[in-house]
Length: 149
Image 1: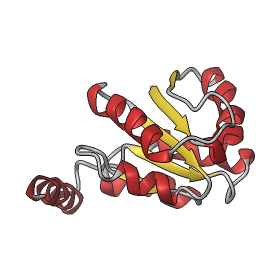
Image 2: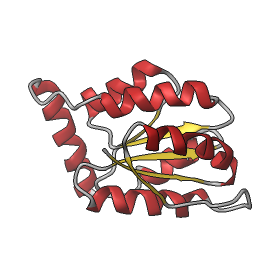
Image 3: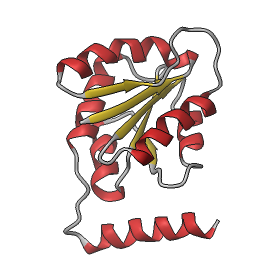
Image 4: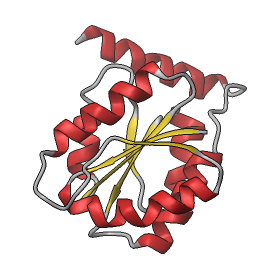
């Protein structure tokens, strides 16, 4: 799977811990930064990740900041992005299955590398349940909310 990954300075170290395991798992990985631990604004990294997710069919994004909260706020401001903060395995897969989430946000101050790897595996293996009309209808409503603003 094509994965677009990015972090701000608070998420830089955790992102570095995740790059090689993602490559070893066979994913096509695009790192959009940051590329060092110097301060950077999370909205800029969210824009870089989300722009690629929107334009590359089938791609999913991973954003890492201190808590995941700033990243998810920024990502959800971008048309076509459905982002969720996932700090437990259930949310990591259910957000995709029920809500067609395409960007997962992680908090480096909340989860460590071991849990982050499990969360990402759950997120990436999940698929939107198109056979459930309730889920499809709700995601269509999300799209309409986005178009109305």
